[in-house]
Length: 441
Image (tube, rainbow, N blue to C red; front, side, top):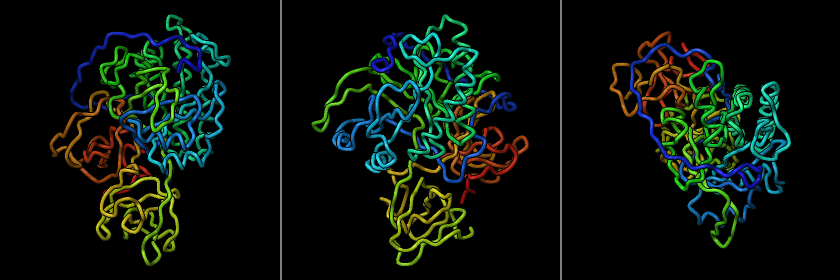
């Protein structure tokens, strides 16, 4: 983002990998669990994968339509902050809804105060003495701005931390204080906390405190290294074991122009496998009779209201539930209620629709060693796939009773179908159910 913030260019460095360590489980780690303890009922996380781009000013909807011919499917939005350098005539709640309906994922970035030793010219800064209070106030403003645009809880909000002098110990301390305060405060409102950092300053600073009990760890990192390499592993200044499960993005090419669909934009290029914004999408009730909205994804749950045929519903995400018609998919609405997807005009009436995210409520892994993922809700089930590293996000879809681990018999089914013990996932409770996560069908 140097063309807007006055930072120096990104230095290249040789890529080095980090070995994946597999070990047995221990007790949960101390310090901050660093994830939202409670998600509001009308919330869900959304993950973007593939390529994205960022521009100073959010493009027009016409430009986004033309750029559907590009390889990009995520667009960054600078949605607030005292150091934001460009006006945003297009960035409204209506634009957010329309861009999402057109198939775009949104990467929300907040350009707030910067470290005192930032290598650039932005005027509003913090020191180690003011970093905590500014981290809180910036996060509070970011949540308010996100809500106004229709970015729902469960969205990841990224604090922009531009390149700074890492030889300045006071500045390193200030960045850790700011990011920790940002993370805690964003979590209190049910949002995920991300951070945009430079490979040679912010990333090694946060990597160095990744396992510390003194600082809240952000959920995702978006790293700038303009080397033309879109890889999300093998980063020189953070091992692969950190931010290891859908928690990374990379800005791999800086300031350049591209033309797609006849429209030219000045952009940076990004690769993503990371949480982004969650935005509700509008569909219609297709049944001939009223559709019951319920407190859970099954007809066994109480009815909260009835929705008339042809009426519009605002869908956040889709989850697993009781089979209705040809589908076991249920839709979660913005008021937190559930409706059977079979009677809603989503793209598919038989399975999940790619236009909508799966309903997930991420919690960071709190064990000090990798957490084994299994084929079912118990330690008697075989391990499946790679273990989840400490601090990795477990994208929880639903919960079920399983074998006792620690103080809990609750197990979490993740969005990839694997299971992990809830005792080692930092959500609302380590011994019982965590609202608003539904029970597994």
